[in-house]
Length: 189
Image (cartoon, rainbow, N blue to C red; front, side):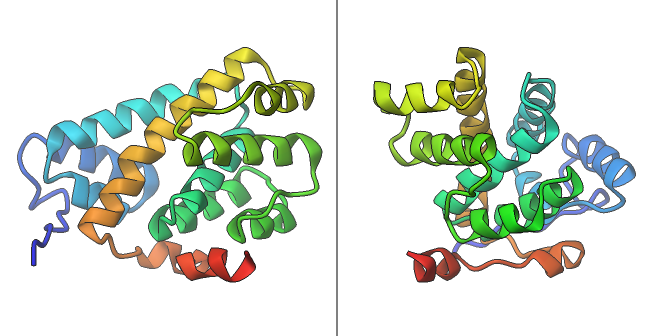
C-alpha cells in the first residue's frame, strides 16, 4: 500500500516548512491536508496561493464557504466537508443551511441555494453546464464574474479533495465536531 507521510513544520521537506509554519501561526494548528500536501511543496504552495486568490474574489465569505462546501460534498471529500462546515459556520452561514449542504441538498435560502446548486453542477458536470443552469445562477443575483469564481473554487477543491482521497488524510481533532462521512450524502439521496 502506498502511504503518504503526515508532516508537521519540523519534519516536512525544507521547501514546505515555511508554509506550514505560517499556517500554524495563523490558524493555531496545521490542517492535516497541508501536512499531507507537504510531500510535494509545489502542490502545497499552489493550494495556499490559489486559496489566497479565491479569498480575494468578489464572493463574500459566506458565498465562498458555501461553494467550497457544496463542491466538497459533491466530491465526497470527508476532510474538506468537515473543514468547510466549520468555515461556513464561522462565516455566519446558518446551521440549517450547513446541514442541508452536508446532506447534498439545496438550501431554501435563495441566493445561497442557487450558489450551492451551481457549484455542485459545475463540479459534477466538469464545467459542461447548460445555458439554463447559468441563467438560474445569474437570475439569483450572481454575475458572470461569480460564474468564473465558482470555477476557481472548483479548481481549489480539485486540488484538496483529490489529495485527501489519494493520501487518505485523517481529520484533525480541531475539526472532529464537524466530522462527515460520504455515506451521509448517499443516505439523503
